[in-house]
Length: 279
Image (tube, rainbow, N blue to C red; front, side):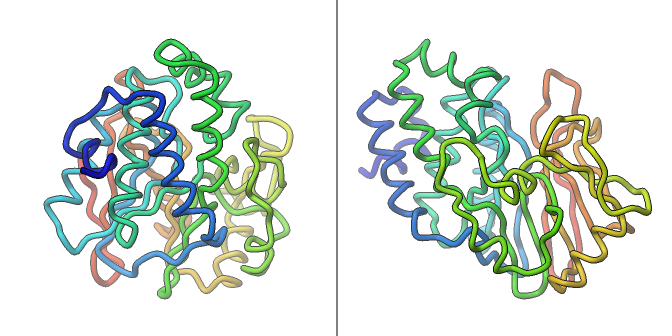
């Protein structure tokens, strides 16, 4: 039986060799994808930060099983901080492998060598395996696409819109294939945060290179890309979801985050209608 299918059926005790096989399959499948991949128009589940909470990843898997014609976009941040980081990222990667036409896994700011070393994933992997296995996972991080865009104007990424980007080609031309997120456009797509203010960009408390984008920047980006909706993750909101810019931007968080959040998954239905699913 295919390894990814075994993981989806509950296998969690992967060997180092099996992890290398799993990540290698993902790399082969994803390395030819564009930085911005095409996503479905309707019946899509958007999953926010998981941060090593296997329960949330399993809830997403069940939604996919229960709706055979649905698709799913994972918005990044699969490990770090949580109690079952290795098992969670293995499940997400397995879903992406097993359902290549229904599931896409995007890159978050924590899918980066330096961040994953700092916030827990490196130690989680080292305690079970070895530093070499951490390097294998990082080789999978670098192939993950940066964003999604549907034909009816639905944009998705982990963080937000990057400063100075006016065309899709500017994102598609980025070299994303690095274990660390180096390119400024890629960095801002995975790190930036929205704010309701009537401004374009301002410094972000997260540090150098990260920006806060306001209503003016969002409106200009939406007009340039002909957007109707945008989904992103990255920020902790107690209710697990927060809307910005007259409901055109939806931020979702799918981890309980030490009981600080009521985690949600967002379901996009026909006619751009939204359902909030409590995990």
